[in-house]
Image (cartoon, rainbow, N blue to C red; front, side, top):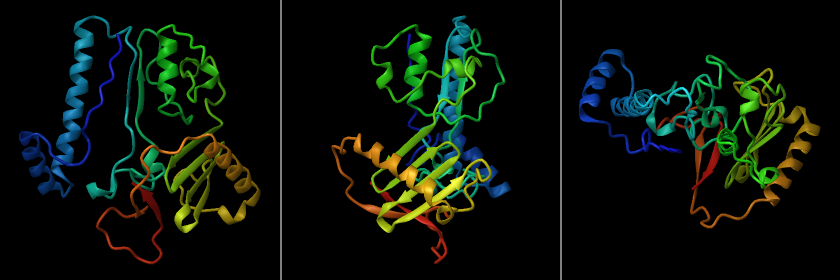
Length: 263
């Protein structure tokens, strides 16, 4: 069987179950922590995932069932929590690590040793190839797929990196991860960043001006990637600036970095 369970939580509008919200209102009052409705929604997701896992155990199929838990993006700026994506910079809708580095938990007790951790960069489109392989399906289009089967990496049958290059694109805002280099561009204002993730995983030191050869290489990769993409069926209707290090509603200051988000 195949189940894809996509929770609407945690997402705007923030509206948790009344009993949970009430409990977190007291916690927020006592500890000065932020939105009770947000915390209530997180707990509701936990409860729902727990029901699924409990049912697998009751059916005695939990050991042979592949379960993947992940999120589509990092925490949003409208939640107004300073540390929601810490130690990484950025929010949902940006391609700084706070916007794209998410939980990616894979469990398959009969096939995967527990408590492993990987530092390899992987992507959501790897899920298709991975579960197809787990189901014993060999696709005739495998060479044309963006994703890779992660099982040989999880089982330590392969020691290389699953991806040499990954791309993110949302209208005006784009990013490339190529080896250790992370390149980010906000085209509207011609704002560009380059980070060496091997020494600066928190993206604090923009070295764009210092590495022109690496920038040219990555920009060529990005041009090639963009040439292979179709135009959106529904173009963006507007673009708005989003501060990278301040959440929604905080005051903009001249030195603050930002990207333009297309929506």
